[in-house]
Length: 293
Image 1 (spheres, rainbow, N blue to C red):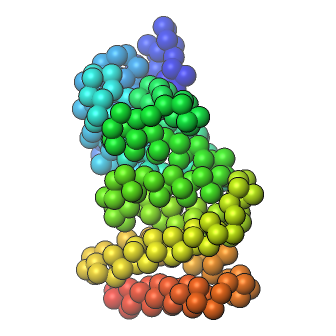
Image 2: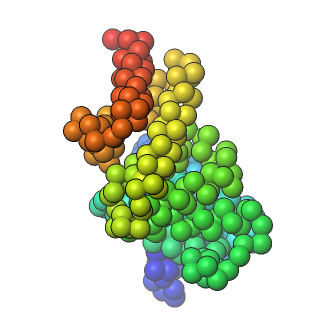
């Protein structure tokens, strides 16, 4: 159904998806949500868009990742809910890590396939927008087009372009950055650090002044996430670990975390980054102290 299939092949795939979804949910636990996802995709391929919307709305709350929302966005577009389709596509793209290093299994490639299909359907002007030949009609369309470019830039390793797109997207809709659980600001900071440290396939297009600006931008974004997490109640401890532990091990942040890298920064910038890492470590230790043995 990812091709998408037609004729007898589609009928067979639809029958298999329905058979899977008709099984006893308790026998398969969390895996049953994937059966529903397959049924929802089958409904979409059959042109039963309202049924697909109903199925995918239920699945999106059960499965991590963008797949269900990508199909939901396409189904919404097919029934004329264009605004909701763009918003759903935007949320789906911002919820996922599109870097090529993450595309290691079939589920990751499924995300890429469905994203490209959704972009072609919902954002037909995206290629022209990339070339500077199309101007969006309103802020909502502008945001969707900006985010539509973002996934490709992340996959291609264009860290400078990705950092600029994140910045523009957050300016168009600040709430996207403030949704810490979704993790968009974390990924934006990662792109900004890479661009600020001269890494990425477009590194030559980022001059020293912009590199300094990107590092400061990344610092501000990470500090905002840290401040938000610091104010959470103890019930958010898993989220604190999820958002902060990768900061201490993700190699993409080595340019502003490793001692030899920090030594190349100005004294003021070095002090600010060291302060951030100290505060991250302190919050993680505080969270660990609240955990039950």
